[in-house]
Length: 209
Image (tube, rainbow, N blue to C red; front, side, top):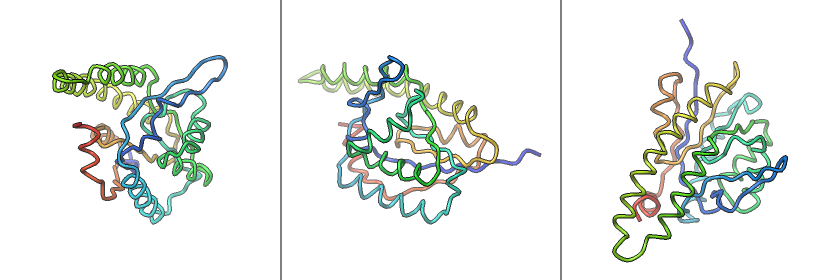
């Protein structure tokens, strides 16, 4: 009987500095872009990451055998440098990830670049139109199209974890709260959640504004 592997799942909110809209990386002559996210309240997000860090520290994970999967991190071959760049720009999310990398954990490219670009372009186009009487219709359009993209993104991430996780490694997954990736992963993994008190007012600000 096949043994079910353990997976650590961490639902998170993102700060503005986590956004890849300002982040690009050039490697082998190719410009690499990442996905933009609307930022939550800075103080609330920082408190959340402090709480998550404390809870994860209590788990005593084997960092030299841990592989990190982070939403918004494209498969690009330059994931570590991208994480360090975003950490330098003030991202509490990537600051924490770079600390785990220093302990021996490996950051894996997680998302399909094309899907991230589609999500980013959708957000930009709709924000431009989000004025006056169009506001409600623009919100509805974004929610519908973004939801469809999120399903595709989650399927890609699940496949990416299956394809890259090595025997004996422990996956730890950091995902925005709107993802439903954990439901896909429950088919193959024993999912253990690390949940800190999320500021629900900030969730509403991000996804329902």
